Amino acid sequence: MLLEFYGRCSFKVYIPNKLNKYGIKGLSTVDARAFYMSYVEIYAGLQTEGAFQQDNSAAVGRITNHISESGRNVTVYRWFTSVESNFIAADRMGDWNLHLHNIELMIPLFHASEHFSYAKASQIYLQDMKELQDKMDSTEFKKFTEGYFTSRRSGVFSDAVMSIATGITGDKDINCYDAFEEGLKIMKKTERQNLRKLK
Image 1 (cartoon, helix red, strand yellow):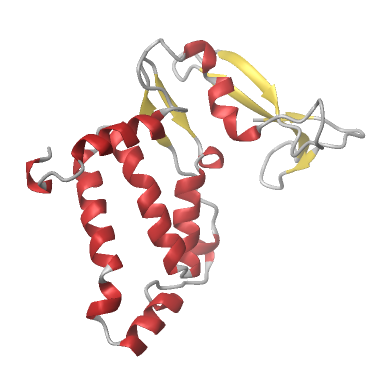
Image 2 (cartoon, rainbow, N blue to C red):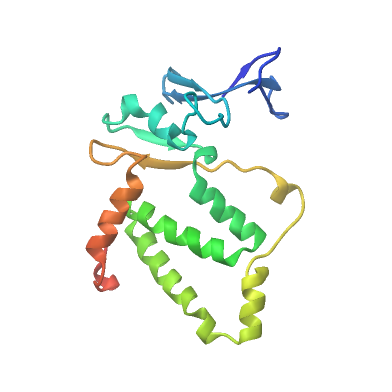
């Protein structure tokens, strides 16, 4: 959300594709049916160390704290989803190690959101890709890991900024800011088990 603002302000932002191009960025919680805004927090950017420094990585937890145990679906935009953003960046840049690292980080999130088939497929994919060096010719593997595993396009479609939304259903046990830890707990239960038996 961009609140229109003209004047002097150290954390004023410029977004050229917005109607009001200059303003103050706000993080908000909005009811999608009633269009009722229940919480707004001003995003002031990175603060200097000291009494006023705020941890922006916990922004989703702060803006959804008042509805965390209501069982509502929370949709979070791409700006908050660093794992998914890094995954897309790795594929576009051709960074093989970052690609595998992000797949590894997504597995607990798949478990937490009960997408067990994605978690299972990602685990198998990750195991196969880590053994790839032994199966491929060394020159082919070197080219592959230097960016030849992805196709790069230039043009209007690939240059467009795409919004990605992720929905995590929260209840009193799982909410969007401890989903990763819950997914890790579920993963620990499935260690050393036959993957075919997982649902």
